[in-house]
Amino acid sequence: MPERSSIPVINPWIIAISVMLGTFMEVLDTTVVNVSLPHIAGSLSASTDEATWVLTSYLVSNAIVLPLTGWLSSRFGRRRILLMSVAGFTVFSFLCGIAPNLPALIIFRVFQGATGGGLQPLSQAIMMEAFPPEQRGKAMAFWALGIVVAPMLGPVLGGWITDSYSWRWLFYINLPVGAAAITMASLFIWDPPYIRQQGRRVDYWGIGFLALGIGALQVLLDKGQEEDWFASHFMLILAILAVAGLIFFVIRELMTRDPVVHLKVFKIRTYSTGVFLMTVLGFVLYGSTVLIPVWLQTLMGYSALEAGMAMLPRGLGSFLFMPVVGMLMSKIEPRKLLASGLIVCSYSLYLLSKLNLNAGYWDIFWPQLLQGSSMGLLFVPLTTITNDPIPKEEMGNATSLFNLMRNIGASIGIAAVTTTVARHMQQHTHDLGANVNRFNPAANATFESMIRGFMARGMDMATATRQAYAALFGMVQRQAAMMSYIDAFFLLSVLFLCMLPLVLLMKRPKHTHGAAEAMAH
Image (cartoon, rainbow, N blue to C red):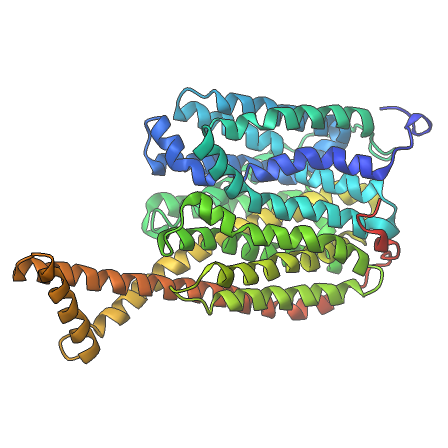
């Protein structure tokens, strides 16, 4: 690493673009493969359930590496870790593209997730330092833009590439982006003077407990609904391993002299409150991101690509409103912006909970545009407030934990909403089905009308009766499924409102002036 005097003075926006190229690529890969799983399974002669390990393997390795990023940066240098991460992610993207079978693809996805795991906290830490404290609002507006928009573009881009070319091109498109990111990072990124490669003792026990706890938790959350949670012995064992691993990890990190993760940063009230809010934000953002395309495809008859296109308003709202929030940061107290974001996002989810099976495109468009706009009010102030009291020496460690908890919140959110929809659908099917009987005039009239319709097609009475029963049960199931999605959207809406009092626990950031130039340079 060059001495401070030899480090060139570089425009912070060039630094921002340099680190966000790789980060955007990595975040995009968390969702771009989702809609292509049936194609991957068919191409590699595997079942769709087996193919879901392509997602799980990536998320597990990604989650394990995330909290280690701060320690890796202090031990090997932040610039070196950044270059190794981007280079590794690019190489393993190519290997995923040429994978001859499913086991090979899963192994390459493990390494792809591991090498990409550090890109989010590294980019955030570098950008927090590249910009002076009074301009961090605009830096976080740019960072949040990539973090929020990339997961929303993933399903659209994935559906289009898979339909137009092949699922392998989902990985090949990373090659030019990765090459550009490596070139820019090597030219414009340098370690600050207080980051020195430290030869401290390696806490192997801490790393081991972390890998066990986070890895088991991630697999549990990703596969729990498929296995009916604790009805499966495998899921029960994973839960025990996750709890034990995380408890022993916390004890180890608080007692050892050279921890891999500095948990004492949670003593800062503003930071710990902000991390909790970010966990909830990940829960709601990714939970609703999963709900909407599934609802559109299973109940509304949308194709995968059409469902992805229908979700574009969320990305559009974020893209348009993030710069506005950057400007507002210098004029309005950030905590007020954060509280406004919670209210607006809660209202957008409430609007989604009022939809029905007759909803058209514009009924879906406006709530999503509103929700996308609210993401700016949430991510930018929350990131700025949370990291404002963190010393520069702890920034890498703090951003690692910040991003880890967002990802864990996302995994919990996805697991929670899918379980909620499945359980509520069963209950609503039972309740609605109980009203479909011979004593219900409306049900009888519908049933008899169906029989007459089937008989008009040339069916005999027995066949027409069976078809009418099947059609009536299908109607009950569709209505029950719609009601279960409404329940999930409403619960997410209430959850956001419950977070409002926590904003009062956070201290007003000391440096917000200057954010008015957000995205202007």
